[in-house]
Length: 416
Ligand SMILES: *[C@@H]1O[C@H](CO)[C@@H](O)[C@H](O)[C@H]1NC(C)=O
Ligand SMILES: *[C@@H]1O[C@H](CO)[C@@H](O)[C@H](O)[C@H]1NC(C)=O
Ligand SMILES: *[C@@H]1O[C@H](CO)[C@@H](O)[C@H](O)[C@H]1NC(C)=O
Ligand SMILES: *[C@@H]1O[C@H](CO)[C@@H](O)[C@H](O)[C@H]1NC(C)=O
Ligand SMILES: *[C@@H]1O[C@H](CO)[C@@H](O)[C@H](O)[C@H]1NC(C)=O
Ligand SMILES: *[C@@H]1O[C@H](CO)[C@@H](O)[C@H](O)[C@H]1NC(C)=O
Ligand SMILES: *[C@@H]1O[C@H](CO)[C@@H](O)[C@H](O)[C@H]1NC(C)=O
Image 1 (spheres, rainbow, N blue to C red):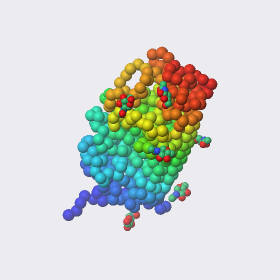
Image 2: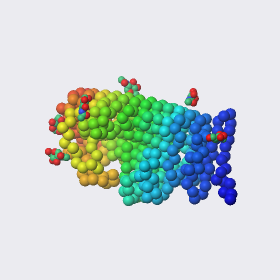
Image 3: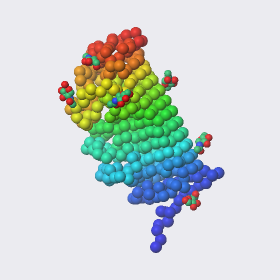
Image 4: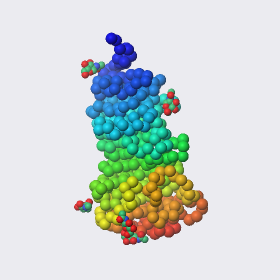
């Protein structure tokens, strides 16, 4: 018996040793197995092309072979996840799940490139159905771009991702630019959807446009020399370092510059989170020129899902050194509103004693923080009442740029 020819038609172009795989598509079927069977021939000097005109069914996870060398993945067609929740949950919950729906695991000179055509090149996660019922079990991670040396992520467009988007841990020399994450809800639910999770060294993120519902950027332990700039973040939780030091682990984050970012309707602007009882060091971190809502820094983070805040007697905490918040402009939303990410009462981001008018909250431990400065901070509240700060002068000895107390914002000499 003969099978339909299209299943076996592999479009292949070969120019000067450079190969192009035109990814085959079959209507009504999962395209992942066919592609996976072909990939081993395209791990070097190759373009893997999802063609415009097709809506590819990525109904099972796509894991690229390790050791890619000079490979470009071009997404000019649309890609779609399964649209029913239980199918995805079954796969994510199985022992064979590779950790993300799209995963890379090592390689050199790897480019992930989307399309600039408005109606093509979208990766559709069908997240709305998950958000509407607040389904948090076995959510898929999106793109895991791990252990890549000389990576590029450009022009990618993500539509309604269920949860996390790009993770880059262990990669070196990454340029991620002109990407778009569109995770706006049609309804008023607004659960957690993370955009970029940076966990490697020498990374430049720029010109990204992100509408989501969790950290716009999160920088994890092991990150060094990370530059994030000229971007737009809407509806999320902020530009974050951490959370670091969970379960007493040793954190290491250094040389981070985040600048020229518009933060619209976000919970926080800049944010640093380390767990109570953690270890290690976060050093030389600057947030500069941020148009925003609020800034928040805590060495005392805990997970809302695991019960009340612990009364830690540990004297250990991730040390904080040379933090600069330089140039924050904008309004603080002090008219009560429903933010949507609260799944506990009190809300996970509630700070005891906070009034909602704080432009800065420094929640630090004694003897572990040095040279934390906030300068050129220009904020006002929506109601016009006085802008406040929270700060405990026994925990940080340098001039932080404002009077260190729980009270109105009063600029001091380091704040100019
Ligand atoms: C694909 O790989 C097989 C062996 O794995 C090889 O025989 C074949 O020539 C390759 N095809 C192309 C087009 O490179
Ligand atoms: C990666 O690209 C650079 C610059 O084009 C080239 O010099 C290098 O040989 C490539 N690395 C590999 C492993 O092909
Ligand atoms: C591709 O996906 C996006 C997002 O779901 C959608 O708006 C667009 O219409 C799709 N393109 C086509 C040609 O179906
Ligand atoms: C606290 O830090 C010290 C010195 O770095 C280390 O030896 C010790 O193991 C840490 N304790 C905990 C509970 O992590
Ligand atoms: C701090 O980090 C920046 C990169 O953000 C780097 O250019 C600078 O050299 C670092 N400074 C120190 C003292 O390590
Ligand atoms: C922590 O201490 C406070 C005040 O002493 C107490 O009310 C609270 O229950 C304690 N929390 C835990 C988790 O033990
Ligand atoms: C300030 O911090 C010290 C040391 O952690 C603590 O004992 C004190 O209660 C704090 N003061 C306020 C007002 O929170």
